[in-house]
Image 1 (spheres, rainbow, N blue to C red):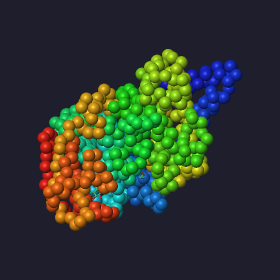
Image 2 (cartoon, rainbow, N blue to C red):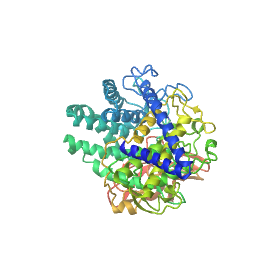
Image 3 (cartoon, helix red, strand yellow):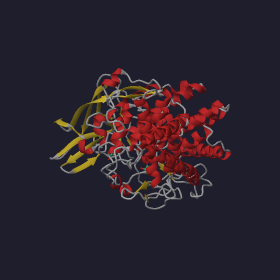
Image 4 (cartoon, rainbow, N blue to C red):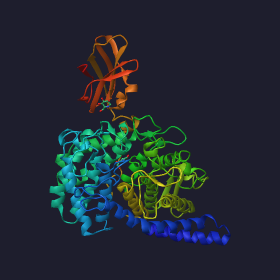
Length: 594
Ligand code: NOJ
Ligand code: NOJ
């Protein structure tokens, strides 16, 4: 709050100085924008909160039939039909509500009741067997359920492995507050068992392929990996507090492995380096996935650390530049905008889903990353420009050179003032395309900004509330990102978890002339299930087909053999083959085509 007031005070002073000197323009625009953004937030904040509450059962006004504590994604029941409960959406929404409760933004008894109903609803969804499996066989990766709590059995992009991590993070936030407020019993006996199921799932399955948060690409995904890392770290701390660390001894090693793997998504080449969203999928890789990862793993105590992709880190700022600019030529509403004007942004530039328009939650995420960054720069009293982040800072000062600028310098003031105005311009853009009733749909038109796709998207409302909170300087809790490092082996071997071992795959397969046998599987070295790029086996010892591949050590790997004949591609029948690689040495698998 105080940093915001300081900035506002400064902006008014600047306005006076500049006006007096005769340069009206910019500073006055900043002041005008600040007050119009303030005005928008004053009305949109209660509208967004009401929008969230209307979509939560049992008594939300727009979700008839939803069980107590169940969040519907949107009341839209056709084109798209979103009257389901997604673990991701629900967990992000309740993380916001639990933050509001535990930070005393909303201490109402009715909110507490809702949180407890959410806990009960999720505990029961965890136990609901579904097409991803039973609770012990992968069922926690199921992305969505019917709103009465029963399994959704239609075809879907499953599993999605971010859900358990996001749910654990929401519940850990609640547990930490309960412990501080003398209710350790509830945290220990009710919350911990639910949290532990989710974290065990993360610790065991994080290295397996997953559908990304947009439910489209089956590979490894930055957002998923980043939120899994966070959840495990804060889970370890909670286990220590509760005195149950002996039950989670696998977590620290896996958290280190995940953090190592996270580094491999960095895409340093080209004039605008960025964080690649997915290991598969054949797109540019530029994606709101990464901006959402940064804001949802923000740790105000971690400084501008790049290893955990903190909002003010040079990697995350370089990425934000690449992400925002990617939409400049894609949406016609972005045509002819100045370099420091907000751009409408969506999930990723190649998106075609429901018209492939900008998304409110993606546009708000840009502003949120910047407010988070400002919060850290102001509290640490300095800001660093590196060669990596220089192009981002150059948006605001074309002559800026790498260096560290203390808050007493005019460079610090100029940059933070301009970045605050830039962040505000993203809110102003969303404000311009918010209808007068405050409703936030999923998307807004790439041509004229009118709302499109699912109406009253619960996640859109939650994203508005979290960006408003970030702007007002809300102090969020740390999750332990400070000072984390990756092993030197990891740093020099980006893309793996260090050690690899040679694994020989032999498969007995009778083929006809023209047919060949290939392999694809769940890790990078097995092409992340990409059949087009599957690896060809040798038939030198026909009918045994063979290949030796270097795979990460101590890793659960899934794979299948594929039969290809010209254009026709036949996968082995289900289920996937699975094994765990050894810690060292070589390994041989002898299979028969299934
Ligand atoms: C589609 C989005 O891509 C996904 O992230 C979300 O979970 C669902 N819609 C429901 O809102
Ligand atoms: C794609 C393949 O079609 C399928 O057979 C395989 O099981 C999945 N990827 C990975 O789970």
